[in-house]
Length: 394
Image (cartoon, rainbow, N blue to C red; front, side):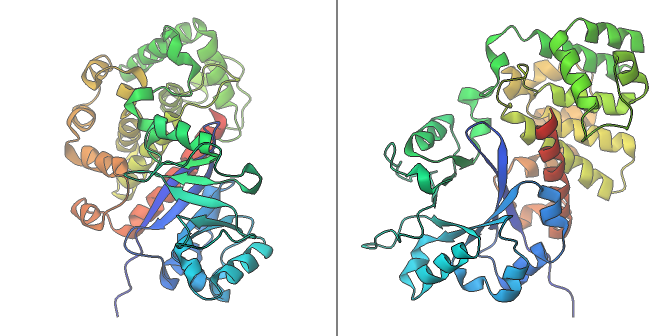
C-alpha cells in the first residue's frame, strides 16, 4: 500500500507589537487537523527544533483530537492551543479546555462564543480572525490580564493599529507587506537612505567581482553599515569561529559568497540599534531560504542555490525602497533568470517565488511546480529556522 502523502500545512508567523516573531501559527491547509496529520508534524523532532525558541500555535476545531498519545507529542511549554470557540457548545468541552490549561497548556478561544454563552471564567485568552468582513473589536475590549490575545488575518497596518487598541498583543497576517507602510517599523524611513544606497553599490561591486579594496572602501564610508556587518559576522548564528575585527577580515576570511548574503539581508536591517526590527526582514529571509532549499533539493549547485536565495531576498526590494523593481534590478546587473523572476515571476525561480507569496499552500499549485507536500514542509522548516535566526541577529 502506498504511503499517504504528507499533509499540507499552512504556516504563518506571529509577531508582537515590537515587530518580533514570537510564534508560528499552524493551520491545516485542507480541511481540519486529524490524528495522522499531527502525528506526521510532531512525531519527529524536526518541527519544534527548527522553530526554537518560538512557540507553535495549533489552530483546532475542537479538543477531541487531543488524545493522550497526541498530547505526548505536544510539550505544554512550546505548544499553544487555539480552539474554535463554537466547540464550547458541545458537552464537557469547557471543562476539558480548563483541564488542559491546568496541565500547563495556554488555551486561546478562537472566534466568537456560541450565541447566548457567557465567557468561561477559566478561559479568557482569545484569538480572532480580523480579516475580510470581520467586524473590528472596540478599543480596550480585551483584558490584558488574560493575554496574550492573538489577532489573525491582520493584513493592513490600519488593522494592526485597531487590533492593538482593542487589546491584542500577538498579530499574524500580511500587514508587513502593506503598501501604505512598506518601511513600517524602520527608523530609516525618514532619512536619506544613504546606507541602503551604499549597500546596493556594494552588491553591484560583488556581482562584477570587484577588488576587495573597493568593497572595503565602501564599508569604511558608512558607520551604520560597518556596525551591522561586524555584528552580523560575529553573531552566534553566522560566525565561522573566528573573531572578525576588520572589514578586510570580513571579506577575506568569511568569503565573498557569505558576505554577499549578509549584505543582501542588511538591506532590511534596523539602522538604529535601539529601533524596532524591520517587518520585511524575516519575510525576505524566509523567501530566500525557501528558494535556496528547493533548488538544493533539485540538485542545484552552489551558484544556482545562491541565485535562488538572492531572488527570494530581493523580491521585496521594491517595497523596501518604494521604487519600481525594474529600476532597482537595472543597477545590479543580475542574471537573466533572476531578472525574469523578479520582474515578471517567470521561469522556475519566478514560479517558486509566487509560491512563497501565496497566503497559504495549494496542493494543485505545488503539483504544478513539481513540489510534493513533504518537500514543501521540509523547505518551510528550513526557511523558518533560517528566518528566525536572521531576525534575532540582524
